[in-house]
Image (cartoon, rainbow, N blue to C red; front, side, top):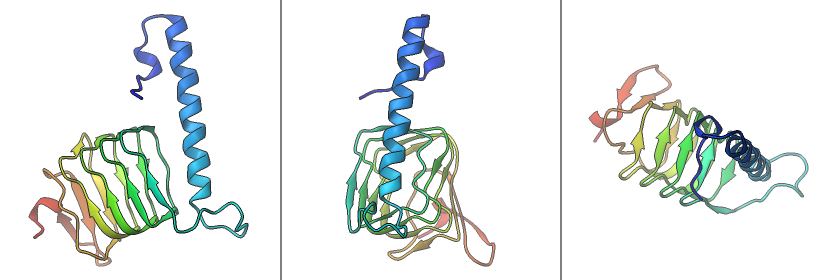
Length: 160
């Protein structure tokens, strides 16, 4: 479902409706994120899960520390700062045809196969100390900053 930010509304009623929709989206995102983080309470953790949020409108998504087998965000729109810090996606993580409208942090994450075919970004994607089991991702343009444990910055468009 498309999402328009509250401050783009033309009337107070429309602004209120969009604000309420934002709260619902943020709550749903938090519930999903909480279930994807391993904790001492094993009943709340969804282990060995495949997550498909294709086409979703996501706001300030924080999946830091999440563990999933595969994640699919094909055609999703990420608004605000998106966080996948210390995430572990053991299978395929598809960000194909996504629209990042803000920075995305993949720092210290572990990724099996990660793809960004036809992805669009308005700010860099950060991969500080990230581990790519199938090789570094191919990200369109010069919009990624990848640093290894030696602090060397590698532009994603220069990688094989």
